[in-house]
Length: 167
Figure 1 (cartoon, rainbow, N blue to C red):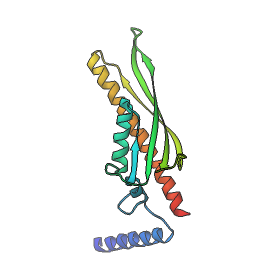
Figure 2: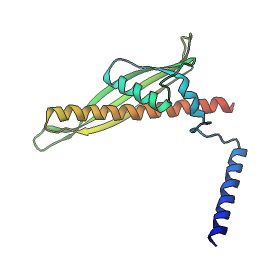
Figure 3: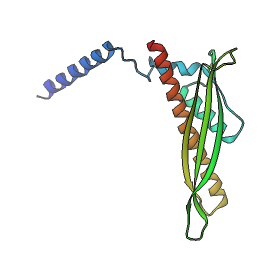
């Protein structure tokens, strides 16, 4: 009974794969996915700490550490920090880091972007009593916000590539 069940499951999986490939489906990720085109995009960010975290996250997410393609992704970041929680002693006990990133995808030699967009992300952190721990917590929240923004930028770029390939 188990072997017939396995055979049935295998045939269903095979037929589903054939059906999906026949309808024009192309995977976003994987070796033959649309996101493979992101690895040739150069990444330029600003000089602040959040820009460094954003650039590292974009390079990792896009697989673009050795990019040499005809496109460059340029970003501008704006970070704000706001108090979220106040303790019984009237001291702020939690902060939120809000990150807004405006980006443009430029073809080498062109001054007008091929694509532009804006993403927003947020990460929060508790304020510990130790000054060092507080600085470390803020840095960690900034890095998390940058990673989330990089994920959103990469997803928007993949969707744009997928739309361009389908036309």
